[in-house]
Image: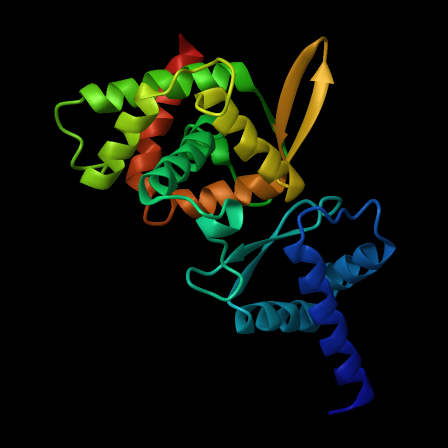
Length: 240
């Protein structure tokens, strides 16, 4: 292997390393800017970076050039996140509840396939936590009351929706839907997928383009039917 090939392999691995961390931004990282420029202008380097990612069970998606790249973990790969990474020590039912809340958030932010948009779409979506909580509480009650949900939910997921429906939407302490969604959003914020801002006295949670990739990946996977069911209800809420 020549020095040029060694350097190209090193730089490709560095780019993948930077792209894994959604908190890295092109604007604040000169190295990221340079490597991203090479990724977009050098086809051989782009193929090399994708090969490095595949070897790590990762998949690279291109965002707008001023945003960077997004990385999705292949299921069961060494970097694939688990609910224990999100919150350790959960009991089985709590794991189901938080898994459903993560899916409900994705469906609320992007209620239709069109809303998810193209993979390189860099538009952002802003949501209010209170509106999210109110919608999720209503959707969970609808799921619990639905006569036939076998096409979108297993018995385990049905029990999870029942648990969510019994939660108080707001209030003090940890046993509320508001607390759990805030916990999720703050965790996603720490991982660079959401940002929190205050505008006009309102607390807004902004889904970054990287989250769009994650939500699309989830919707096209094993949870597609469930997310479509939830998305239909979220879209209906927006239209009312």
